[in-house]
Length: 178
Image (cartoon, rainbow, N blue to C red; front, side, top):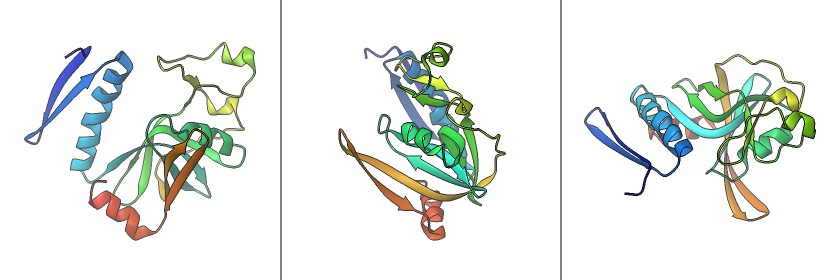
């Protein structure tokens, strides 16, 4: 294999293989895969998405990489409070706990002088503190997950979404381990 990193994880008699072509891919899968499986083992699920808070409830936008989850959330920050970017763990009671407190954005709409101070990853995404975009308030973990939006890119300028907000559907996602 031409991968820069290959590894195998054994978890409860299940074999997980990973092959990574970039350092960022390797770090992402090395940390995300094991924690996802361990979370599932304990009845939790980890969503890949960007999330906001409104009225003490969490809303997450899930999609494949590059669809525009973080871009959408960054635009919603003028109306809602930022919660987490990239990952959100949801427990059996639909309480949510997050990962990144930064938004990863390719072209943040912020002043150039502020952009020059930001870290940038291999994919060219800037790590943007939410207070650079709106009046950010620190939010505690454990917010109830109200709605899951599943985004899908149709073409270059159009994204469709499916809204999942009824209790039974959310519980089924958790029970069926997505």
